[in-house]
Image 1 (cartoon, helix red, strand yellow):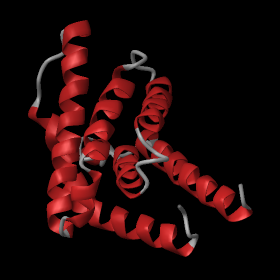
Image 2 (spheres, helix red, strand yellow):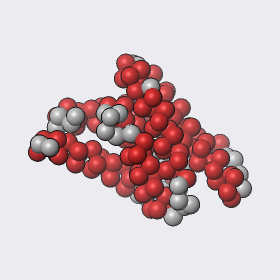
Image 3 (cartoon, one colour):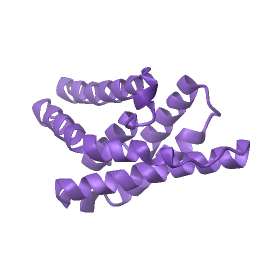
Length: 162
């Protein structure tokens, strides 16, 4: 493995770490419900850009780390992220060719799917109540996706991540 390839992989894992930290960073209670799913959006980007390297296993590991950091039942977010990234990898060729606004809508639906899976598992295990605030991160993900895509694409091209 060359130095450039090692640096590219380090960059990807660094972006995933930043996404993980952004996911658990405290926010004011007014905007907490609107917190974008930074980690999931970063995972979606890398799974679309490099599906042969960053896919279901990466999503499972990041979901497990998020479960540990949030102190929730182990495996809930791992399952949800793995299923969502499976859908993204399955359709990565199509998603790459979509216009930016259409990609943002697909990402929004993937984030909704993620939250519905997490809710469903929590409902089965703990009997949690349904709330429409569940979909607010998907709306903020719709807004932030073009920026996430632009930043990560620039990083990928600048550092020649393959």
